[in-house]
Length: 209
Image (cartoon, rainbow, N blue to C red; front, top):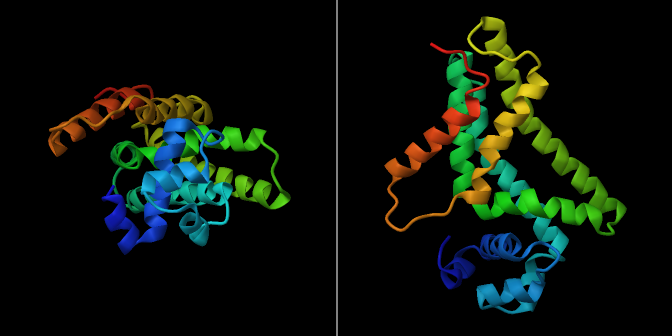
């Protein structure tokens, strides 16, 4: 994420979303206030409200951007002509790497949605939450379709794909909880970490060579 003052000048909405995602990740949705977000930006609360009407609106936009980042990486591979097992593996690599690169956004999606669901919400907010849930389901469906192709072709295994896909996502999604950037970490080291996570996550659905 860019320096907050520079980011505020060039793209205020993105800077506010970045700050909000970091606050939500560190404090949780309910414990974060608009004041917290403004302080992180070294800006005024009024500036935040100029671009976003409420904390809930920030949350919804963060969720959309988190999912957009995933679909941008996944859809070109899902629609490619790669064999199913290779396609599934490449999708998994991109998925895990995107989770890491957008970790504050993905943590907001993971942790804040249940807090929002437990809070009092308007009908409009509930409609948005259902729409967000549908997008998460669409992401899983991309993987599910390729897994079924792999099973049909004999290159992947899953007695019940809808069950088998759950631990795959559980292992991949875990990176947002334990990954922390290390000073001096190279792109090659990060890719090696991604590959190791993917290897473990896909072990149950990939057939041995």
